[in-house]
Length: 458
Image 1 (cartoon, rainbow, N blue to C red):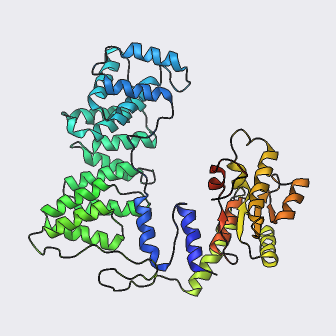
Image 2: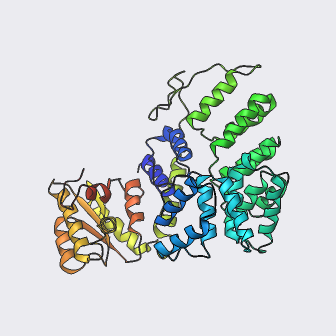
Image 3: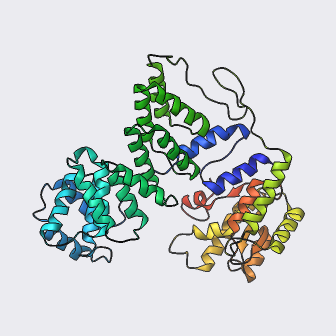
């Protein structure tokens, strides 16, 4: 049984995006996790609804809200969307001001709501506070932000996570930032990635370095991404305070975080320009297969696990992933035993096909036709069997029955699960080598992208 492939399986379960090549590849895997961390807020995300595009264009081209009422009526009348109503317009418009980072127009719109005798709802105020955070350089009177935070908190004793995060963002740019820190501490279980980054940035601004490190360690423990602007702030502090570098370097050593290349280049520049103990060194790369440094030629210690650790890990995977406690994901012990027996008597295979994967990626016009799903699966299987390859098909009872099942058994080995079992867990287990040797898993995406089901797999 291959430890590398088991590590690959674990990596897929966690991120679904990267692969492990060797025990030495741990560096690159963790680096990949860090670099693939989700962006905190995407200004340029594609619009789900057409009215958002029109609203964005209006915000980018207008400097006055004199025609906002007519624009609102025309937009609602044109799109007739359940998502866009007179009641929801304010919050959507403010959200688009946030996406465009247009603080001045957002401020005008909030004033417009007040002048029309209406009260801004919770969602609108929350988006405006987030806008104030991202455009803090344009906010002249920070005390107004504090008042808005108080108003928003008064809207209810129990606020949703998004609203709380907006309040924390707003408070982080005011003299009452400690209230934001307290609010963050009260609900550490919430998904406050942006608020945590904002508060760390705030702590650095007030030279609370130890507390900033403490929160960064909490973020790492909770697998929250640390934003580049936080690291950039650290580097500015390191350039100005020698003792700050001692704290930051200790954090980097203990946490084992991987910085993106632009941040590392800034770090190298800061260290090289230090008046005391300037840094002398060069960038290098680690060979994934050998763990050897390309600069000094020293070899990193292999992080392989012991036989006992591997056996324990394999047992836990079988229990948690294959059997599990969720009736919609787990398999029964009897089914796992049947699966093992099939592999024992019919392996090895050249390719493993998840029948549900093929059915899911059928074109939308054929997805509701069971015969089209079966035909697609048969076509995929025949593509490989025509090349004299041994194929294993994993599927559920509802997909293959009667004549279709007999057709498939003539082409390949077939394992049929109960209708509630997650076949993806079985296929990933095969790819990991958890039960036996590892075989490649077929992905229908590339096959179908060729244009038709019968085209050759590339």
